[in-house]
Amino acid sequence: MRCGVAMTRALPCLIASLLLLVACSPETLLRDENLLTDEGLLTGEPCGAPCFRGITPGETNWADALTIIEDEADFDNIQTQGPAEGSSVIQVSWQQGADAPVCCQMVTEDGQTVSLVFLRTAPTHSLGQLFEVHGEPTWLTGQEMAEDQAVVSLVYPELSMIVYAFVAGAAEGEVSAGSEVVGALYMEAGSVDLLLQTTELHRWEGYGSYSAYMEGDWEITPSVTLTPTP
Image (tube, rainbow, N blue to C red):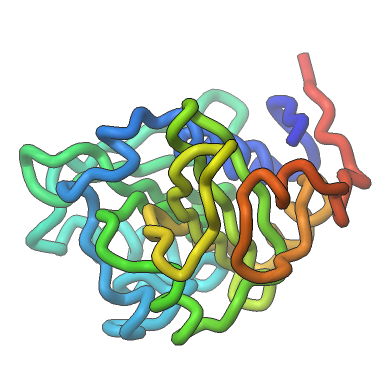
């Protein structure tokens, strides 16, 4: 995604930044048992994706969402950034446990309503388990991180959700039922539509070689370019 600092909306740039955060994380952070333990993605408790602990992007009031996060007993080191001058974007990050790495981020674009929730999760679930609950995705893209590790982003437009899965290297790695889920991004519905206009994506065609997917032609190519402002 080519992303400037602003367009009519800032959210696609935030999504791009979060995708890069996943793709650029070292292995010790990407597959870390100390990251968020989230059963809600599979069980739907206390709410189903794209809802996280009662917070749904595009619906939940920002102040109410902050109260939810602050009241969760297992969340520590809650940090707020923004808004910057001339912007209404606010970001909040936290971790699950005082000694754990930062796992999670929540963003509001307008200062009033939650725009997205980004979760980095412990590798306790597999794609096979995910598909049993949510079915298979519509689109995917990937990012090679090192010779022995890559990450695929699986896009569920109808759920306003992206799920991230670990692959053991771009050359030999397979997207399989056993691939570990290492994160999720929940968005408001309008952001998915814009994401599909600004991101190169492959159509999901089932389990298979990571390299075969990534060396194939893109079924979606950007129709909108996010232009920078001074």
